[in-house]
Length: 366
Image 1 (cartoon, rainbow, N blue to C red):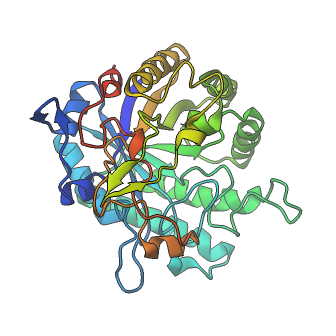
Image 2 (cartoon, helix red, strand yellow):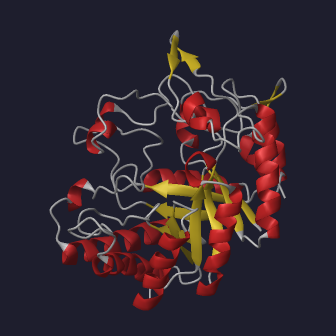
Image 3 (cartoon, rainbow, N blue to C red):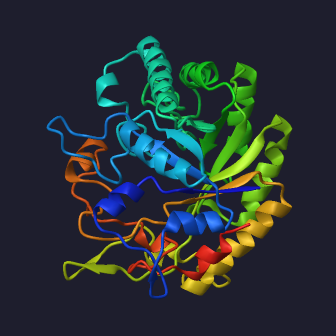
């Protein structure tokens, strides 16, 4: 089983002066992860995470340039690379899959061509820069489709459907991957990882459409996706598709206490109310020790269930001045205006708010 991290915001952290420590000593977290046997890095790519006036959307402003810079750093430390293509200018997940601004008026034929050309361009430039990925995600958390509304997995009556358009789009991305980086493994990544019905539907449709991919990927966050037993039962049922199975995003909190910034408490996505999962948080309280117990037990269960890889999501995303999940410009693009712009995921890190290594860091290892 491989272990990886998604630290797409890491360069932005360093640019804002983030410091990571073990006890009183400053450490290089990438070296520390490597010493644990973590040797894969997942890096997301947004097409154009900037407003027309150049204002960055933040959260790493993860364009191709960020991938190349971070990929070079990762390669220098012996990491393998996973390129996570979102096909959007900012966050893409089950609740939003907005087309890039440049593609906003494209029909299905134009979008198919755009997906192919963008994928090909990213891979060619990555290869030229010496950071060719060894895995590629074609879309991010694509349970409900991509490039809405054209590629949304929903019919006019609100039921799941429209796989014809979706498969053309995903197939174009996969085709570009095979042409440019034929040895790289292709990942199709969903969330809703406790929902066997959706996974069986989705991957049966991929099989029938002849979509060329290698890995079934899942997100797993206990607050949203049930118990580990439900996750592993789902992935076990997916064995019939003959693909590798990986957890592309994993996370669990070490506290529900908000952090202070500028004298103000900053809100968290996973606050005390959302983190309370009956029957689960009693066993794994949202504390440094509970987080470590969860990570340790999860990896043991993943190994015993034959899972091929686990990636922890944004373990280095510390809070701080200028560290945001979205700028106001970014919020406008995804139609989520008026929210806090601070880092709302900081309590899911493997370092505390002051940058001290947490116990869970040491058990996220082979």
